[in-house]
Length: 289
Ligand SMILES: [Zn+2]
Image 1: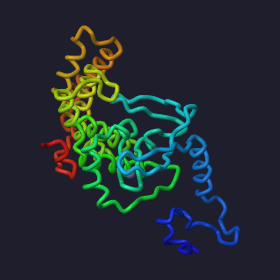
Image 2: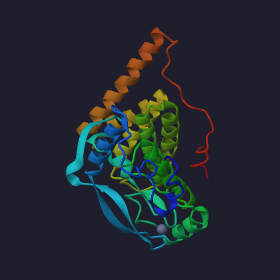
Image 3: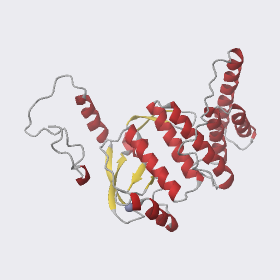
């Protein structure tokens, strides 16, 4: 029964392999798939279709968006990663036009300049073969879509801040996945981009003012094991009079964390938390000019 509908994927009939032709009940009890389907339905109930027009090729398409009532915050990591209950909005953050392959994070999708449209057509559309995704989206899908948007940013010569934010979100998704090696790689790339953006771009950057960005650069340094560099950025945040109290507190907390790690390292140098990745991956050239 498995392959009976294979090959229809490109026609829009993805995920039909499991369809039961004559409605027989041949499923065993306790099959975990039932849970998955229930969860899928639950996830889908938090989403609605949003109509878009692609700014690159003009095609009309829909993306999944989250209902306002379905945003339920659970917590926030020290690098601003927000953890949600119910449904994960990061899964639906990248909008992708399946006609031309243009993809970007939703905050940027409409803001594409005409020279960038040409770059997307030349570098992405010419190679784009189309891609359909099963809904609701999951971690693996969201990681692939964030990679696609990152590829677009690279080809369209986007400012460093956009690649940096995209890499940060890829780091977060890998954190959820439990892949600390890839998380570190993306944090490294994100830091490179934010360092560049800090000195060369205007604020706010994705809603972050200069001081919030300073804090984030400090925190990214801390997370990849550059304790000394992190201390410098946190100190700048703490000693600048106009910075708000909450951000100063955050910077103080993270600074204390470095001090703790340092004193632990002195006690037992065999247990080092620094695993800064020196590996040259496919992303290593993203921010070099
Ligand atoms: Zn398009």
